[in-house]
Length: 151
Image (cartoon, rainbow, N blue to C red):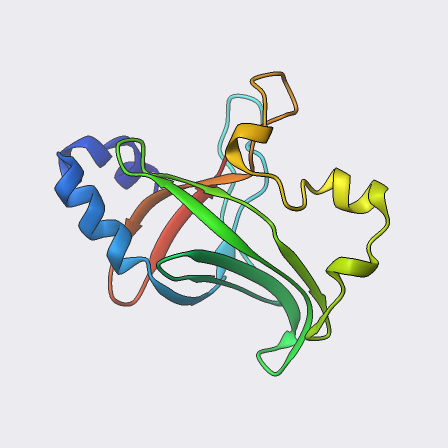
């Protein structure tokens, strides 16, 4: 993963190649491996994800969630994505929240909806520290896998 990320400019040399990589990212993806923040000056090994976690990307939206299995989703979020082809970055807007597949967006207290940036658009985020739109850098994609990192 680090090799692909460091060599992305060779693997995806122009916006056309990055656009094709982005189109391959459309679909539903099960989170298999994840890392925490790296140790200072070190690396963090991949660990298996102990719960069912997924992401979905289509032409307009990004959704993700966690659950016991694919039939019992506990928490999920859905909203528009904003893909910057040049940087391979997908900003995420959160429009709706679901608990056990029931939409609860309208029942969320302000401190929760405000804290998670619910209904915010890219222009609503400033460049101040702590005020960035949630985002993923798409590192690579194929018909069978999607590699991305947060931030």
